[in-house]
Image (cartoon, rainbow, N blue to C red):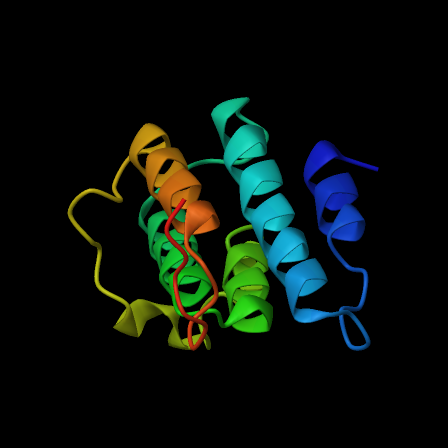
Length: 122
């Protein structure tokens, strides 16, 4: 099994019965693993991956954790599955073009409280 296939398999667990906090953790873990793998050269990093990961981080910011995980996983889809995806409608976003920028945006999004809950002052 190739490294990319092993990564795909490691991210295939269902989040159906998970709590919101667990779904957030799963989404952050998926995005983190994919960023790390792309940084190691497991798969090429191009426009497709930028769009998928950017969309994943935006969904994470909006507390749409299942959607965030789904977008992240699309970044490592096989080439033959990419042509019919709606990912092309997501524009490339300034500040989310490189792996380092995406990692920074992920860290910022990870720290945000869930939407709909009041923010607490520490």
